[in-house]
Image (tube, rainbow, N blue to C red; front, side, top):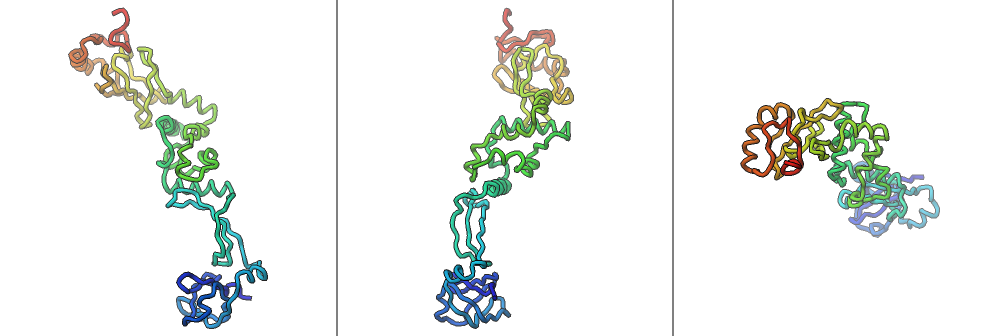
Length: 311
């Protein structure tokens, strides 16, 4: 009649009632050593209940005669210490855990939810980012800035929408170590679809062709200021800085020496040719005398070699 009056002995000799309240016997007595009690009289006026009258009972008796009091609980959670999903199966009698064991086949949806919870606690840094995936993310961020209908690929938005873009690629993974198998580039790319992939390549290309014929990778680490690191000689004849974003965003040019060392940074190539180039040319002619440093860079032939062929 009082299912909340079952008590389980704790390691310290006190008891936990099935209703969730703590209780204790007033004096050491044989009942203090019993695993389970049926509490008949309880003084619950204090912070901890006082058991005034109780009888010992075997757990097996309760399971046999009062099976309706027991519930099975499956718990699938992220374990911060282990940095992994932990799954347990508990037999509960109210607030009392009667038995607990590892859950051999947890619900995949519960595993996925626990894993996503773990990633949110640890942050996106726990994922196996590489240059390709970070560059794709940055290109997508640039597109979202220009076209708000595009998916928001900021870290904050990605963290908030893990179930949408990452969970389908994390099936079967249960730990931070297992996350290292993920292909983030594929997961991000799946957000786009064919038409947006085409637009992305048009508006935020991975490489740009320069007058020398080379295709130079664009770095989108800062989506507001993508840059191209290219040797100065490969740009001879190019009048203006290249642009991305449908011609709206000038590329920042990191102009390099033949030894790939920085010489100048500019968004305005035309201005560089008519002003700073001549001072830079003097220095480079001294440091690299065998290389081609024309007086008129706009009429000169671009080259990826020391000198253009035939000169």
